[in-house]
Length: 246
Image (cartoon, rainbow, N blue to C red; front, side, top):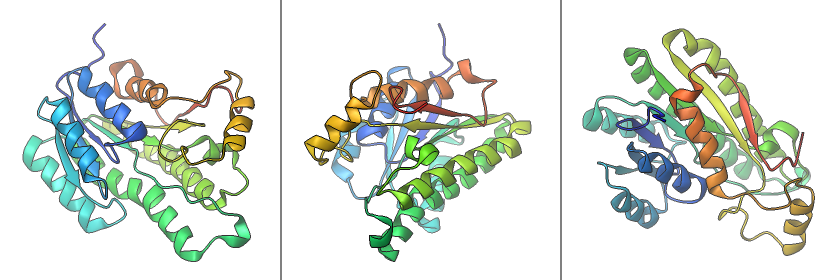
């Protein structure tokens, strides 16, 4: 089955590690040219770019800074002339109880997890409008849907991303652009590797499928939303949490 991925230009923010890496590899394996955005972790992004081939490229940019985002999209336009799929994956996590959250931590969570996708969507939409086509996929979180103790600022950023997704889908649909969100649950990434064992056990026990998710589990759903199988799907939030929450 032809999924319509071969030859597509795909930008994945935070695409060098974790879920972003799995997404980058999945699209590249089907013939897409993947642009891997990174900020602080240059080596993983460069190594993955060399491994992928297909004309792939890595670009350093802090997605929370408008000047960096503009420069990144200018590079994409210069090198490729178009953008078919944007995956807003870059994000950070800093757990803390509500009364203990520092203002600077709150601001950084909102800036990277919410402002970053907003800035990238603005630039991507301008390119996709001219094409009259495009797919935007935002990586939210099941915590953005249901909340969680100790993660109020993270939850707020991911819930905001869902609102951004739904409103943008309504705006951009008439131009042939779909906008959707994926809401992962407990996934085995660098973000979760330092969790205490007892917390991991509790999370796995609360998951109907009885295991921690893999980055590839999320990447498969992102692939669906980026493929021609999802051409009539927009404004949706798809949970990838092993039935932890329903």
